[in-house]
Length: 416
Length: 166
Image 1 (cartoon, rainbow over the protein chains, first blue to last red):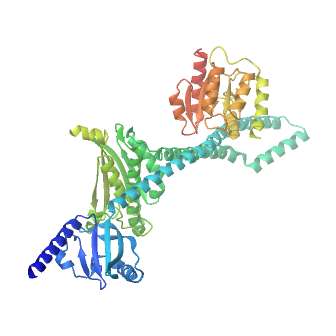
Image 2 (tube, rainbow over the protein chains, first blue to last red):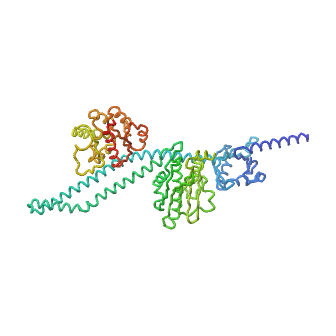
Image 3 (cartoon, rainbow over the protein chains, first blue to last red):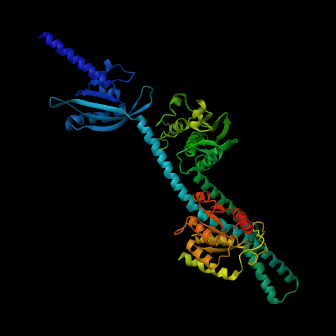
């Protein structure tokens, strides 16, 4: 009898250990919680916790406080409805970084009654990041298609407005030449003691000239037409920058004139910085760089917008325009793009987080926390480059994008 | 509607000029200062094809001292016109047009009027047509195209035509 019980208990213990060992390798967290909210089981714990102490403690203390109310509601609802529920949430990871989880909560039925709740949570941070990158890529592709269409639509009127302006300039020049001749004739006729009729006609010419303010027209009409030509040239410059910037992405890397691409990007982003900062560029001579130009455009755009926001923070408090510096140079076999601002600098406390996805210090609606994270992924993972920065509080920050000139694969081949 | 509005003056012009195609030495248009030279007789004729009448009218006006522009509001109209009067040294066509596009149109011109030098003046996206078919397009000009660029291309086209390459 006693032997039997010991055997049964040994058996139970072994199967419990087996179950623990198996569940420890489940790709997620599995918790069982009793009706009072005490943890009955957890398959594993984060390194900062002790599993023995976790068992029996209240489940909510491991979840973000701002979610306690809604979790409590979901927990209670399971006892009332017996229905399970799935939701997404985020918690702080061991290093304080944000970890995204998808969580299923459902009833734990023992002997026909709901004795507690089973919670299975799986980490989906990587998936979320991929989704965000995919969405950004899709958005860029859509913008590219739109931009190409808009460029085409705008270029046709730019063509005929430009041709018409050329015609008007020449026509105006010719008309004024004729007017000069006519004026000369009028003067001659005036000297020749003309008849009363001619004198009256000459008087009406003088009157019409005065009413039209002919000297003013002579000087200002050609200038106005020149301004139109300049303005139109600017419009077509912006359109062509936009078209090149949003050029449909290629699958393969291709040799690219990076300085030209950066100039286009600065044209497009002009509105972000023009009222806040003076732009200084130092684009040195570069060989063609093998890269995904659409991705590098995206990186530079994100860095420029970020720099503009940093300068904007200072500008709003001091009213003094900052300086946005953009440069390129060769360094050995690498190309280095630098984007510098005269913003507030990056505080020590957040330095280690700035490249994390979803990390932002900006107000809700202004920053998505994707800009630098996306830049990081595109530079390091897609191009085999590095993204670094130098920052000084109160002085500003400069980001450095370092890319292997020959492209990622060639750079790797060079190492081997 | 659009087509007929542009057609009548074009056809009228052809009758006025009524002379053989530019022959002998290639005329030079880009260096012309323009002033004083308004005689129709001195100017070479070119055929411009675009579905946007405003482009045609503006180009006609802006080039008037350098070349005589005969315009056609589409590929079909241009081919019809060339059948009656093939005496053009150069044709400039837009790419994106309803019906026959600029690529197909220039292919027709090459086949039926091989001596005419062919230029493509178009918005973005048509570069590849010219790049992929160097025999089809003598030069690709991207819209918007500055007049100096267009005149230079015309000079080169006249020189090419005058050199008897076609």
